[in-house]
Image (cartoon, helix red, strand yellow):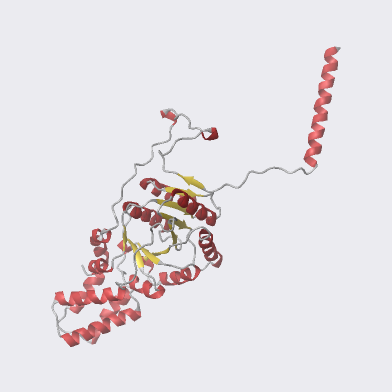
Length: 382
């Protein structure tokens, strides 16, 4: 009998508890949601202690449970002389332009048709119509006034004209030194497929090779692969990467990257932004927002526009729109190893009024080089 009474009492308690829970669920009581995921700081693997609960260092996991070893940190070569070292590769792709011009200029006599052909070669190489005519007019005057010259003199004369059009006095140095207690901030922008993330990673290698410390910001949150790729580039040279959730706010990631760079006292923070079509007004406005958010705590020292050299004159339309959205300070020309249209250097500088500062000459990790007008023209002319 006692057991029967205890059983009935237990059933009554369960029924009452269930009714109370049901009433609470219907009463509209607030629920607690987890905060949105914040940007994460990815540290090169194999550095720092593993922290347990409360920040206490924990014992390392058994060998069988440990993550695969991180890639060994590399020491990239310094930037000085990079373009000279890559000159042979550039010369192979530009030989059509240089050899064609030299062959025509070395003739015993030059007719009007010859001069028109020289102009056509320059235009085909994406030098642009106006600068091509200026070069031809100057060469015609020099040949007429000074008389016929030998091949070496013709080559020197052409070299002088090309360097003059490229602009040897333009400021091509990157502003990547810490100033006022804050790191220099470099934004990398451009349309889809130009190689922004790769250029960002290669630029980090250039700076580390010059003895600078770097933090990378993976503000291309639309492609998870872009952030993963940037983390890999950073791990190779010992640079930390700040990344956020997929499809997160790119301005937030950029802000956190700069904040981390200031806290660590690094020399340079490089922000990789998402590729965007220059015809999409909303995306271009977002780029301006990223820049404004960064400037709440540090100045943006460089905005590098990455252009694919193979797009030629089509790239100039892209460049104009980006220049209107953010203040472009320099151009990084990629894929210069597979095109004979090196004249785009002249055209894009005339269009934007800003210098080409970097050129990409291949797929290798150290194939990004500071642009040097003299070395570039020497490679074109063989």
